[in-house]
Image (tube, rainbow, N blue to C red):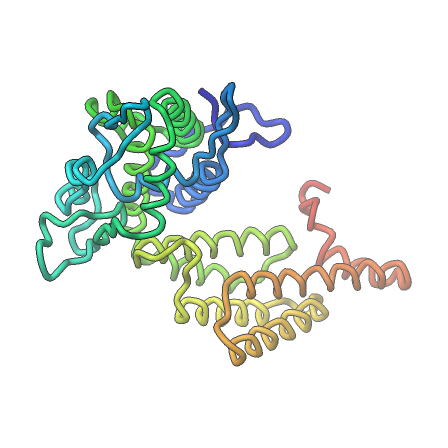
Length: 336
């Protein structure tokens, strides 16, 4: 059993603090959840006969709750069929018991109580490409190969999250306990996000305050990305989704941030004003994305960093201004 999460240099897994998925720190939960999802989507389980990729297989956890043992073929391979799927669906009541508010589960015009649900509360579409790819990938595995992937998924989640209360006894004993754990984690993260109705507004209010360094600005953009992830989950959208309204609010917050910068940061303020103009041009040409906003604003910061270093070499009297704006990029002022 091994985790798909790659530790950074100097990190020790035994000394890391687990994230409580039932806690109140939504930023911490969303960041940890992104780490887990990214690790699993790119995860590779190594066997004697080759490598098994976990990402496509793990996708089935969004659609069903596989409590029953997998059916197998005469060749000894997993053989998921329509009957198995029908016996292992999630219903509205399942999601409500896991903590998702009833109002945040899409109400269907027919068979609302018995319809199969995804972990986000949407009606499960078993004809979707994502689901059929997952089933096809699983049906190529034998039970031993799946057990190795399942154990690695458990190890990956358990390295980041406190998982004691995410699985019931029957779920823990299931053959696909790792997939069940992943599904339960998604449901729990959504339930926390749904209860944090003012989270995005709070983050964007904070973004209006000027940042003293490039690192602080990057951290602020990271918080905004977490807010967008929360919005996507609550609106039952892919994690890359962002509404036009929220994107406009982001650019407005960054505009206030720029105007609030002190006079000794005039060069940086000018560059960020230019960045805002580029965003407007992007919006006129077509739909702007958060990646566009982040790339353009970080580019403005970096270009000012280059100009500041150049100017400091040519004119020592500007060195103090350079320090105020950018010297704290890698070394915060209180560490200097």
